[in-house]
Image 1 (cartoon, rainbow, N blue to C red):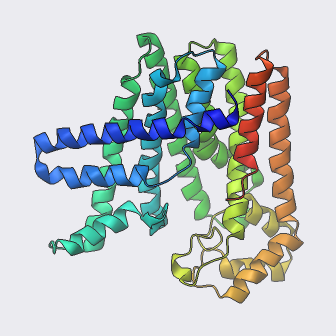
Image 2: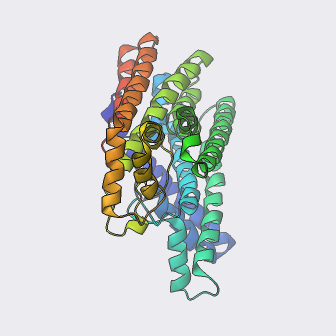
Image 3: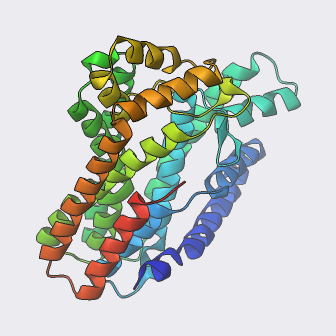
Length: 356
């Protein structure tokens, strides 16, 4: 299997998701017809877009561990997409996001539904409350998909154990991320950023998907530990790349709704590094933009200049390269076949060299 063949599983995974949500809508109808539009909103939100990296990485882990029938683990791959939707629905509420994958975030969509139906009360409060509830509904959907895999019971139990650890780590990472967001920038250290990236992003983006697939194929403990090491390194590098892209993104005309990381006040490695290296004027320029969606284009450009002048972008690129090299060294020591090692290296390139 090469990287193109791996990403070719995206369509079967989406068909599995579509089938899952149609079945869920049918069940919801038997409970109360009023539930159906809300289940449909979850289906639309999940299938609206996305690269399906996490789901495809589960298939990769299955292949790397010698699994012969990827179709048998497609429900587990789809489960990672419902988990992702669950996280995004709740994250968007916390971040006050208005768009996701080219459409409205769940809470914005639910607020619009409130207005369209001329319901009583606050549309914004209804939107957030309903989005939280619908996000919660995605958790049992995720469990259902894992449980529907065609695999031995002991392997299903092991996957559910990995899922528990992944979910817990993600919540810990989000907790630390929220805490960092309200701390003065000068108190944040590089390790604080990398810890959040490992817990909140690396484990559920790369490490756990690879391990889940391998577990379903019956991989031994040494292989699972190997995939943890490779996955964590690539996952942190993936998030550092995301931070670079999210910071360089040029804000749109409606700056209050821009998703640029500076406007959102994110304590990225770029910001932490620049703050430590900048003088008084540079820090003042960053402070005018950090967490301020109404900053002017001139203020934004000046903040980007500070990141460049302090070497923050170069430093982040170096950390990404170091993590990829760390992963490649671990891949090179593996007793996997040459073609499987090549697949892991290609996965690293896709995750860390993307431009959007």
